[in-house]
Image 1 (cartoon, rainbow, N blue to C red):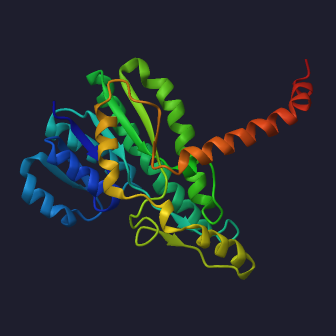
Image 2: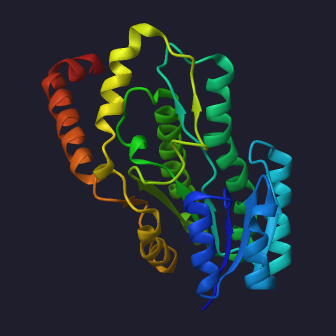
Image 3: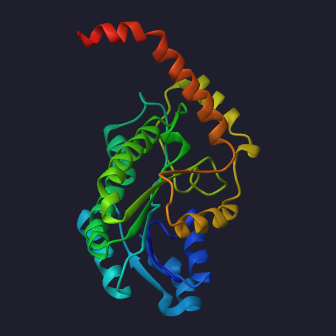
Length: 272
């Protein structure tokens, strides 16, 4: 059975690839972008199956209007995919107030506005699936991506909570956690701080670690995303790529070791 899917950031990268995959198999797609002219070819090919919607996710009013428009147009809203976002590259000391606020505004608040807009519709329907595009950098961190890491950690906490709040309404929540993929996320879709020379070594080590073999092929994610949105009982967390799990295992092993090392101190701090 075809689904009605609302996806943000459909102009490029994962959003574009997935939107076309949904359309190709017969789903109906409300595809948002800041510039919807880039969706003209999909509109020409798939006709009424796609509803392009101009949207800046930072604008809460626009976000609510876009979700409402999609639901009214197609008559329901089965899946919402919050894909819009970008990466801010630079150390924490280098980050300006405006850069920090903008990173959180788009990656966290933009996602929140779309989610808040979709929830009443899905509650009324008695079903729905909210798919939040997080990152392996919402599980562990890398230097030079501090504010991006922070935004994805926020997305993880927000949606783990959300999942527990809405499960009785028949609404599922999934955090998709990709490792690096060869999209333009680190190119045209990214922003850069003004470098401080003291961090040149940190920056060089980071750049040297970004070898080609750690980046997945974006088109290869299509079967995984189709499987996810077709799951009757989808998982809360869903890795994409082969890099995340081995590192996450080591990170969590280290965290447990450190917590246990100070368990006596923690217990004494409880006071009773």
